[in-house]
Length: 109
Length: 120
Image (tube, rainbow over all chains, first blue to last red):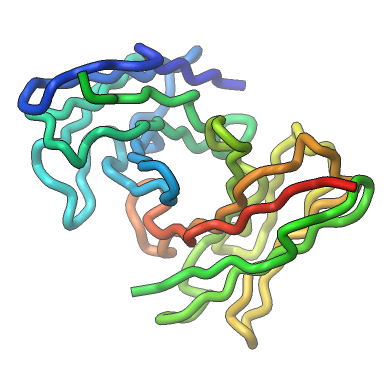
C-alpha cells in the first residue's frame, strides 16, 4: 500500500502570492498516475492536473504540477480569490486502486 | 460532454443496504470507466469501487466485501450497492469517470454528489 501525505494541512495566504502544495508518497510511484483536484465547499472535486504535470483543457496556466519518485507538488503561481479551496492529490495503481491524499486547505489570510 | 447525476435515498437504516445510481447523459456509458467516491462530512475523499473499461470491477479492501458496482448499458446507469451500513458510511457519494482513451487515470467527470445519512 502506498500512503499519500499532503503538506501543509492548511495554508493561509493572500491573493497574488505563490502557493506550493506538497504530496509525498511512501514509495516511488509512476508519475503518470498522479493527479490533483480542487474542491470548493458544496462542490464536487475538479480535476486540475493529470500525469503529474498536465493540465486539462480549461484549467488556468497559473496551476502547474511537478515531481517524480516520491515527491510531487502543485503550484499556484499567483492566487486568485477563486483559488481558495481544498486540494487533493490522487494516485492510481496501488492498494486501494485509487487513493487520495488527506488534502491541503488554502484559505484567505 | 458527459454529465453525471447521482440519485438514491438520503436516509438509510443501520444494517441495511445502500443503493445509489448514477445517470449518465451526453454520451455512451460504455465510452468511460467508472468509480464511486465518497466524502464523510468535513473529511477527505475515499474511493469505493471501480468499473474498469474492460468490464472488470475493483473495490476498496477497507470496505470488506460490502460493495458491488455495476453498469446497465441499456439505461446508461452506473450503480452502487453497499451492504450492512453503519454510521461510518454517512457521506456525500459521488460517481466519477474518465474516458476510455484518456491519458492518466484520473477523474475528469464528477456528478454533483448525493448525501446519504445512516440513521435509525
